[in-house]
Amino acid sequence: MLYFETERLFIRSLSENDLGDFLDYRSDPEVVKWQGFGVWDEAEARAFLLEQAERRIADDDQWTQLGVELKADRKLIGDLAVQLHSDHSAHIGATLNARYQRQGFAREALSGLINYLHETLSTNAVIGLTDARNAASIKLLESLRFNFEKEDRDVPYKGEFCTEYTYRLLIT
Image (tube, rainbow, N blue to C red; front, side, top):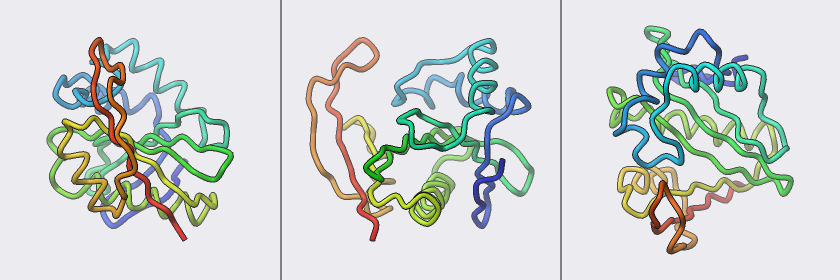
């Protein structure tokens, strides 16, 4: 299912056909360094893609991953995470192949997602969480006009404790 498109990207449901491209970035330790998951193997990736292929963005507090596909060559270059809440807010996140980072794709995809959530699903607040050490994510959220909301210390993260920042964007 195609959710929306931007100038350079299609944002769509993931499918089992994405396995190769998906594993290309989800098995890269640098890409998943700041994610809540570790490096994936083929079996984990296939099972996840099959589950996500059936999932739709819904108000059920479940995370849904959407594929970020480059229009130019129809290649999956990342995915967006969305978790809707009954109060018309949503948590979002992004994972992008290292070869496509720092080219504006994450910003373009998240900007489109924010517009989609507001215009289609009446979302009025979007929340992004990031490890305080993830300077690129902080810069991205701030470039999208998210406001720093709070700092949580000693948040369990991959066997250690980190400081997590919460950013919020109110949409009117």
